[in-house]
Length: 198
Image 1 (cartoon, helix red, strand yellow):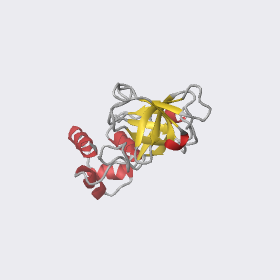
Image 2 (tube, rainbow, N blue to C red):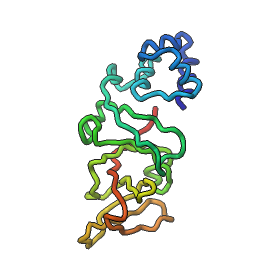
Image 3 (cartoon, rainbow, N blue to C red):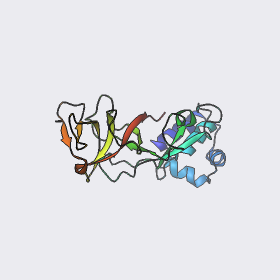
């Protein structure tokens, strides 16, 4: 996607050059060539500066600099679909005020692999997760792990449970809700937003 997006921008802006773009974002021209041939991904901050260079909207004049960076989960589990995830996302400062933690220190980005939470969360979408919020009170969508892979499930405390048991469910009818004890799985964090590439 990175290479195709960048090729499209150059095609739409014949007055722009690889050298000019490299200078605008602080890279050497060979780095732009690597992005164009698909051997290097565009980093989040670079993407915003590229949009600025090509005259595309960026959340206000200084949005490229008014962001906080959120690390993307490394993808060594079931939440990734096998494609190489970006290393980080830059979240606009207008959202930063509403996200928990200081400058994204308690947030991570995950990509949804399954379709069990559709229609709210579709396969391939990215979600912002607050890893400091691990208690399903109030109930909501969480990233959880069974020790082998991560998954997104709707979590709530089981009714009349004194042991902290949590009922997990999914939106699709084929998934049977389960009541699990805290030692059976790990709650990684609460899903607080969906992210979309523009």
